[in-house]
Image 1 (cartoon, one colour):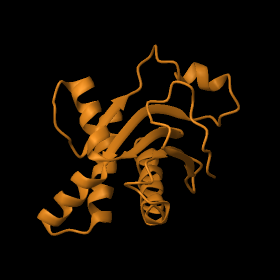
Image 2: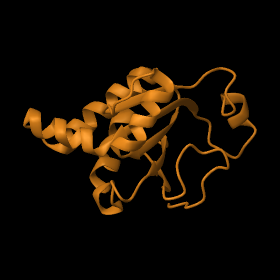
Image 3: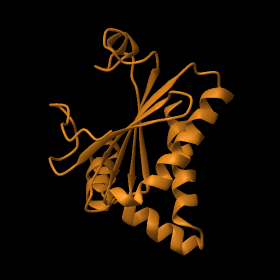
Length: 158
């Protein structure tokens, strides 16, 4: 399901598209992506892999439902986030922003909406150029590296 409307306070720029990936177990990944870096046709396999991984993490850790945000961006955007939140003026492959108890989207706030009973753990950002360069340098498939970074990011959220 694509939803081109962003939340009023979304960190994504107006060129960012949004969609919700639902997993087989009913977990969710709210995805914002920049089509200039992540063409929609390139996301299908990653959507399947990340959904299976999220379901597995949910079962392994008995989390009783997981909802995360995922920003798929370019090096320019992740460099800005890395500088703003970590004081590092360079792009990186993945950043994680764990949910804080007093955040707007706390579990109490979600419970008051029509959202399914899920625990919102936070948001992950992944930069395409850095991920592609690293995968090439390591001699691995981009989807394998994306899967690794997705799990890495989710573990930081937990």
